[in-house]
Image (cartoon, rainbow, N blue to C red; front, side, top):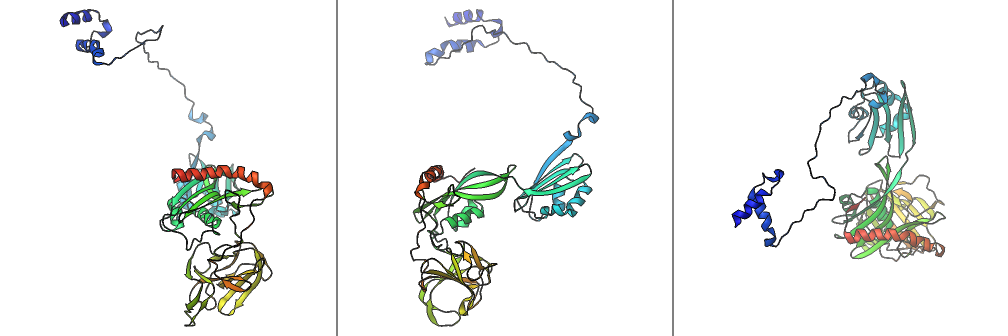
Length: 439
């Protein structure tokens, strides 16, 4: 019976299928018995016959070399500045073989910006295929764009503010050793790390409070020119989880130009006083009633906090106020005393120098540089001696409760909440998904 069925199937084969093994056809006829079925269909009016293919070769006339426009043979090249680069090495990598251009760049007064070579920045040049310079573009560290353009055999250099556009970047990370180590690992620029530390400086002492396992999330602006990152912008929102406690900040600027950082509820993060007058350092001696003085060799009270830092480190005013003293005073050496509102004053001792223009009666704002770390007076090494005084009496600045600043004004509250909502959502995204970077 099986042989007869095979013969019948073989007789019904079309010419196109006669070369298919008979066992395949028999196998297909028995597939439904195995519990499987395959269906094939052909759309109506479809011609199943093979399509005839033809190869067509045509001669196309090409333009002569001398008919090509010279503008079609120019190239934009871009190189990134490396450590140790010189003007000569940059021009060589840009494949500029144009002595007239080289001499112009070396001598032109308006081209001196190119000598501010910042590693990581890019230089773009437009040249002919023979290496003649047509145009050159470079943005220096002060965001000034140098433009060199050729007109015939003449060159012209000009400088102008670079046109920058902002992009939002979101990053997060975990502290292993230090804040800077964590931000470096996450690819966060140092300028943003410093801003973030400043934002939370009234609540977190980054000298004492940081612990392994603390986490941060930050949303910030990065400014670009022609697709190249040029500089960091401002922190738009940030979150820091310190010893299990979460701190969150969002940036807000009202229609009158007042700006600052606030909690999602609208409370001002800027306290009346910063916790520390230095951005980053270490405490070498705390506030105590009994300390062995390293120079006097006696036990005596130490009514301030010493911060160890290199000579020349900027010292910041911890609050708005008026300069009461800017001069020398016995063991303090060079000292600045600031009188703040009410009964509060602060003192900054052992300074190597005062900020330019600082004098008695000067008004200073919180965060302004008032001087620089030194070792004047009775000091064994460079450090800052900082005192927080209430009615002339020294108090421990690390433990005393700091006064609060004013929250969002009632008339701006709805505007603030509308602006804060998407920033909070971005922080939630970073916290919930544990992202390292979103750009």
